[in-house]
Image (cartoon, rainbow, N blue to C red; front, top):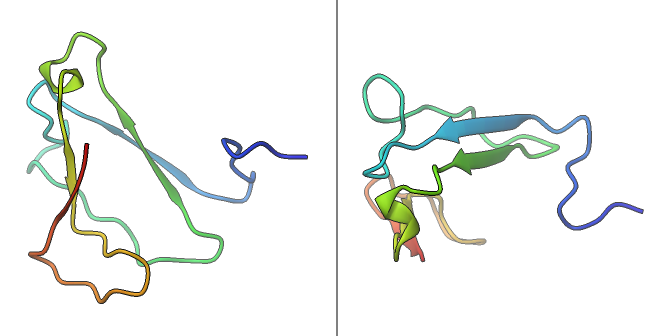
Length: 79
């Protein structure tokens, strides 16, 4: 039985390092991901424990909530 934290071995996992200010640690400050797939993929964020974003930081994404339409410039906050 798999725990809720487990990822099936066929599922692709992307690891995104974040800078101290919360920006992706990649050239250009943003990333492109492939369209959704089956099985879906996982994006994991790596944040240094001493980073200022660990203190009351938020993650802002333009991934729509279930059932909503994608709008490139509409963002949701995860605290």
